[in-house]
Every structure is written in C-alpha cells, then in structure tokens.
Length: 602
Image (cartoon, rainbow, N blue to C red; front, side, top):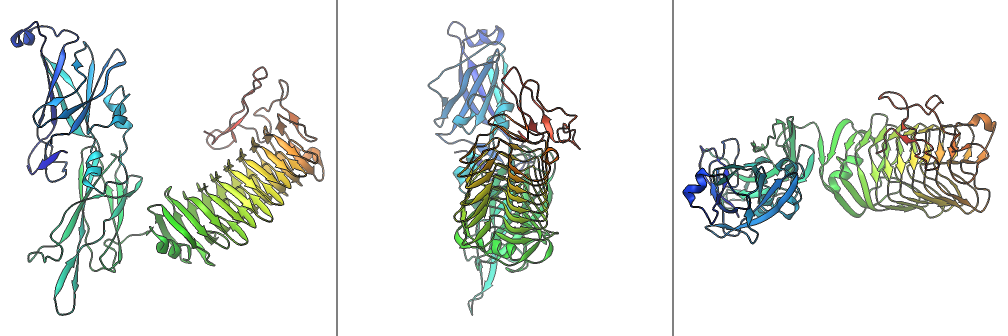
C-alpha cells in the first residue's frame, strides 16, 4: 500500500530504473556500447515529488510498502513482448518471476496499482482509456485501487525510466460536523454520515473517509470542525458541476453543489461544504436530489411546476406502494439509475402534465398492481424520454412505459416481461392519442385477451418504432393491436403468436399504415397475415408501400430482387440529420437480404 507524507512544495513522480547488465560486459562497457536484445532488466523503484496541483491520501509525496505491485508491458513491432508483468516490492527491491528483456525499438509502459485487467493493452493511452474508477471508494483500499498512475518509459544507456503520473482527477470534500446543545452539558460536535456525490456524469460515488477530530471534541476557538473525504473520477475536457448529499447526526439531509469544477488528469479540487444549521441546504440549489424511498415519494407526489429532480443512486423500494393521485409538472431526471420493486394502482407517476418531463430513468425488479399499470406513468401529457423497463410487471392490464399518452414518448424501450393477467398488454403504451416514436420492445409481452408489441391501441402517430420481442395473446399485432390513425416507418422482427388472429404489424388497421415491414414469424390459428389481419375501408390506400419477408399478406409486397423500397417512396426517405426515417435501405443481395435500418438503430 503506498503511503504519502506531507511535502507542500514538490513536483512528484515515480521512476522505474532498469539496469541492463549483460554477463559478457562490464557496467562501464554497457554505458558506451549498443544495447543487446534480450538483455535482462532489473527494476529499481524510487519516489520523487508531485506537482502542487494534486494531493493524495495524507499529503504530497509517495512511498511504497512491501507487497505493493506494478504492471509492466513491452510492445515491439505492434505485438506484446511482455504483457502486464507484475513486479512486487519486498521493502527494498522490485522482483518478478518473469524476467524483463530489452527489445530494440520497443515501447515500455507501466501502471500502478497492479490490475490484471490492464493486460492486453498495446499502449499507455489504451490502458488509460479502458479504466473507469469504481463508484464505491468508501475504504482506503478501494480508494487506492482507483488511483491509476501510468507512464511510458524511455531508455538511455542502460537505464529504463518511468515517470508515473496520476491519470484520474481527485475531489476532496470537507463535510461539516454539527454542533448540538444537549441539556446542560453544553455544545457537542457530532459527525455527519458519509456523503455521496456525482461528478462528470458519474453518480452514486461513495468517497473514502480520510480524517477527523475525535468524536465529541470541541474545536479550538476560531476554527471549524469537519470530516475529510476523497474520491477519484475520470478527467473531463470541460468544467462540470459536482453535486452531493450528506445526512447529519439527527438525520437531516443536506445538499451541496459546486459549479465549474475542472477535473483534469492529476488535478486536485477541494470543496469546503458549510451550512448554517441542520435544516438548511449547504448551498442554495435549483434542483432536488432523490436518493431513497421518502425523497422519491415526495417527488412523485409533488404538484409544483418548474422544479428539477435528480435521481442520484439506484433505489430498491422492496415492495413499497407508490400509488399517488398527484399531477407532476416538473422535470425528473433519472440519470440512468434504476428504481425497482414496487406496487402501484396505476404507475410510478400518476399523471405527467404538459409541463412535466420524465427522462433517462430505468425501472426494474418486480412491479405489480391490482388493475391497470403503466410502469412509469398512468397518464402522460408532457414527455417521457430515454426511459427503459427491464423488470417484470403483472396486472390486469399492463404496459412497460405508460398507460395513456396524450404527449410524447420517445427513445424509450421495454426489455422486460409485461404480463396481463386478465386483459390487455403492450410493450410501450396501452392507449396512444398523440406521438410514440423511436421506441422499441425487445422484451416479452403476454396478453390474456389482446396485445401489441409497441401499443395496444393507436389513435395518434406511432412512427420509427421496432418490435423484436415475443408477443402472445388471443389477438395480436406486432406493433399495434388496433390503429385508427397512423403507423409509419415501423419494423416487426419478433415472433407474434395468437390463439386466434394476428397481424405482423397491426391486427386491425382502420386508417393509415405507411412504409412498414415485417420479417418476424406470424403464428395464429385463424388467418395470420404478415402485415394486417383486418383492414377496414379502402385497403389500397390504408396500407401503402409496406413489405414482408415471411408468410403471406393480403395487403403488402413480399421482399424480392424486384420488390424493394426506394428512398423516393413516401416514408422511406433516408435520414439527413433533420428529415427522413432510415439509416440504410439495404438490398436483396442475391437472396441474402440486408433489411432496412431506422436512423436511430445501432
């Protein structure tokens, strides 16, 4: 384990000095002769000074303990000659069971602390790019394991030297103690709980506690009392906000934020958090952090407009009932975190109003309800974006994202299992009266009566959506069960199976289906149609330029060498950054077809 002592001046680095000693030559000869390939390198490790832009565990200089390890790699001719060979410090020397050799024109690079995952890298930069600090740095060992240091070596005479530099950015926080008056005993200082923070797009970071005054000690006159925490994050090219929460001894929750923090490789930032009392946020913030069941319930029950909620860690609700009747008119940013395991009569949010927005949230685990459940919301009149369901939901009527949509649902996906115990099921939305676009279902949708891969019933626009999951019910549509408006530029590649009737894109289409195709299997005991089972009105105008590859259809065209969509057809235009729907239209390829891909598909 490396140690640090306080040297406030310093320009500090680590050096690995390899002595190249061929048996047939003296040391003096080596200094003046060309190095011979295959010469064994003996490593010697020394510690020098840091630059004053970076602080580490307890100061500014580095030494090593017996048992510390480094990894050394050699690349010559584009191939690894030595791959992350571990060298162990015994208190005096660095040794390895694998001898290091000299290679003419080779590149040498090293990393500390040793990690087997650093193997297979052909350069120092590749090693750095593959490294991401862990969120949990709550112990000294975990913190030090994330303090990546690397260097590319240089050979001069018989010496191979590495000057290691820190590659992550360091954040240090001073979290205040609270002063309490306890009866007649006077003031006593009690610690806060360990904080959590996010920085540079990484959330849920648990920093390492470094030092404090003894509990209950009163600081000297004119001084404050605080705990010191540190964590490491990836460097960022632009300044970011560092945000966090901590809880006081009496369980008050305090928030802090610091804008425009530069997170440079090897850089050091100290955030001194202060607060007036245990009920006041340490810094005035324009958002509200969500971090546990109570703060989540407060968010979903809020009826205020213009607030900004941020989820800062995963929350397992362990079966809590999240039913609410509130209308949410603010923004809730899930930041990619997951809320799991809850019950609800309708959804996590009851209603998202026209001013409301739900973005970048994942729901997992088990979601259950007695009647009709849309996992994220019962009703959406605003926007739901970049949300993903990865759990299981079981209700009389069930859908992965939202029950009724009067706003916009986009870039959402269901990758879980949606099961209707008595009635209807859909992957994304049960009833759509507005816009569902750029969404996908790759999960399993099971309806007792009727089911659709994306929507059960469409009264608005469903466009640029994909079903690749398995959909089963008595009556089934791959994209929609019923549509009384527009389905455009959609794909079904999943298997859709019905006890009775089934359509690859839609079971029943009463208006406009344009530029869609089906390549999934369509199975039904009635009359399975590769595109539409029932098409009311004028079929020639209600189904336009749609294709299929398996089975048969009364309404579309089967892909072939002479039947393939072109960009001049309505709904088949290539995306140019502003308009269009498709990334590529593919081609027949002599019977090995490459089918069209939507612009947002990976």
